[in-house]
Length: 136
Image (tube, rainbow, N blue to C red; front, top):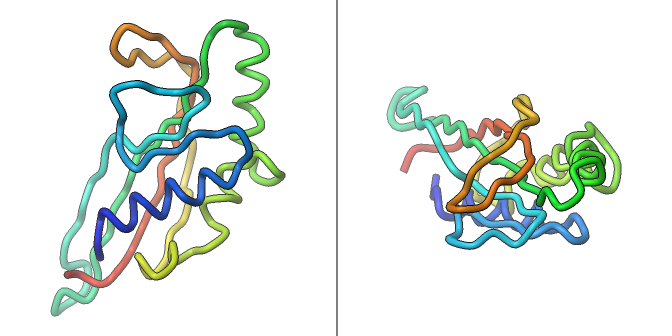
């Protein structure tokens, strides 16, 4: 499984939501609102012969705080299980990310808190995405 292709695939899927910037990495400057990939845990050799690797990616969605109430209302749309703004629906629309993995599942969302990136504070929440694929 190519982790760069997985990260790019997740960002491409998230970017299908109108007005949402999406990155397969944590950029130096964040245009808001933004979906970014910050952390990952990799479990190698979940099946014999490099048959399966499992990756858990943590992907916060970050919004500006100029209007806290409006930002949190918009955040709720991204956190929804379905609908035009649902990140879960967008990320799971192509479960193989164009062939970058065998399957993925948005397992949970945690937080609804403030995030500090550089000098800027954002309101957001973190998606946990489980990705499985053949070991490389």
